[in-house]
Amino acid sequence: MYMDSFFWGGGFEIMFTLVFVLIIGIFVVTAVKGLSQWNKNNHCPRLLVTASVVSKRTNVSRHSHPNAGDATGAHGFHSTTSTSYYATFQVESGDRMELSVTGTEYGLLAEGDRGKLTFQGTRYLGFERLGNVEPV
Image (cartoon, rainbow, N blue to C red):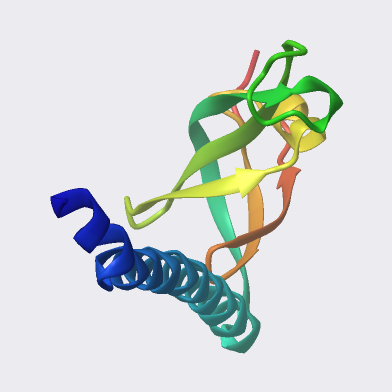
């Protein structure tokens, strides 16, 4: 009797609406944050500073997807992975910043490299390595 009153007495509709609004709200907040950061970066000046690469890291994410569009997984799953690449640069003042870089740039950078870093806000634009300044 109690379950009937939950489903047909308005409880289910209220819960469904709340969950739906919550999910839509999460999407909206995520989109607004992303657009806000993109806009902030676009309004920041492009800076060229002397910096050195102090560390590098990767973040590997694994995702499982059901085969044949079957959400239950009755036909099995397949996995995909994605890798994000990051480099931490230290500028002459001692400040450090971690920037997202492409896989190609990540492969070209080595810890200890010194050069000219170009960035705009939190957006990595490039790194030009300086020649060896220490005598061999």
